[in-house]
Amino acid sequence: MTVYSTLLRRPFLHRTVPFCAALLVFTLFVSALFPAGAAARLVDKVVAVVDSDVITLSELDAEVAQRHQSLLTSSAPADRAQLKDVRRETLESIIDRSLLSRKAKEANITVSDLEIDQAFESQRERSGMSQAQFLSQMEQAGVSEAVVRDNIRAGILQSKLLNIEVRSKIVITDKMVKKEYQKNYVETIDGKTYNLLQMGFGWGLGNTSDNQRAKEKALERAKEIRASVLAGKDFKKLAKEYSDLPSASDGGDIGSFSLDEMAPSMAGAIKGLEASQVSDIIETSDGYQFFQVTSTDKNAVVVTAEYDDVKNEIREKLFQKQLQAKYEDWIKKLKADAYIQKM
Image (cartoon, rainbow, N blue to C red; front, side, top):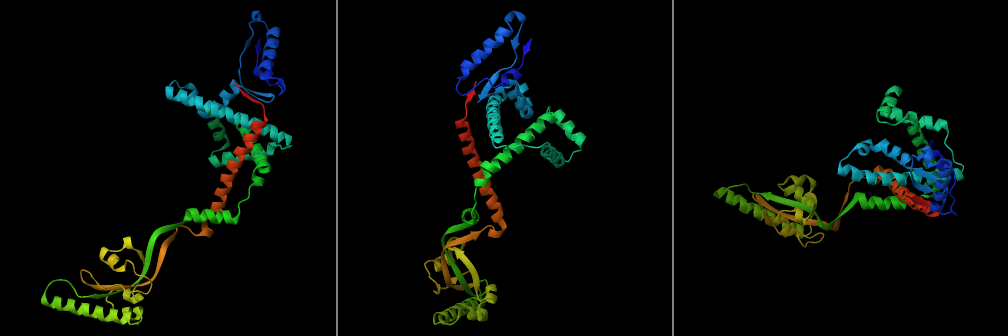
């Protein structure tokens, strides 16, 4: 005669009775009913006790098989080592579900067959398979429809319980969202930057006597116009009228640059200047240039995404982060308040 694990599910353990003593009493009881001469044998093994519930080896193996069948049949050392970790993690998951199930029962939380049917059908629709194909794939994977529905029930139950015990207590404020936005989407670049106006006077290439004269005239013009700027005349107006560079159409405005973005000769002329100051004239390959600093910034700010475009995404990420942390704290407390014994 065979004694199955269903006998072990009777609530024979209580917190006030040490587990080992209770197990010994039960073993003696079974031995008395089914002596060795009757060829009785115990075919299942208890791997953990959660208050008055037991978790058996067959339950643990069945759940491991649903997700890691190849590890159960493998003889490779690496796979066997991994299987040990998988068993430990799976056992913790079963223990968590047992605690959640009891807590849900205390809170009178239930899951209807209709909810399970709808969730099952939703999974099937997401797979893109017909009903027959979906069931066939589960069968090939060694997972029964009943097991899938049990897992769905546990998931819905957990979600409802978390809504009451955890989710309802999480608050994400606008201030928290904006702080996260500044941290991840707004970058401040260290180093001074210069907002510049530019003016240039070309003379061409080569060393012929004509080009030499053009070079001298370009330098004279540069000195003359620079003197006008120093005397207070408007740089932008002069640039539009006299500058030979493309920036002339914008009044010489070439934007903002840090020193490491400039050519060495340009950086040497700009470095140390403050707002409204004018640089010395520098020589380029085909002309002369000088600059005026309109303003300086100690730090440059780079925005990688607009706040309105990412605020909802940020809020959801913050919520999920808090949810995970609060769930872990909550489940730790449940475990601390329960009697848990692993074999």
